[in-house]
Length: 57
Image (tube, rainbow, N blue to C red):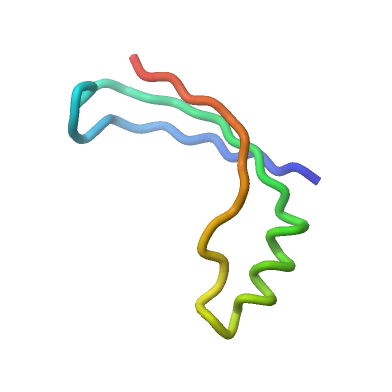
């Protein structure tokens, strides 16, 4: 089961500082939930797989 997150903002430093960016990413929260439950005693999920894209400008 894929879930989608959309992000946007302004680049804060580096070559593209001041330019706008947008992105869209998908992750499988079903398997992520199992990782979160399993990792609860150790501080939760530290990383997760995702696919997506972003653009600057």
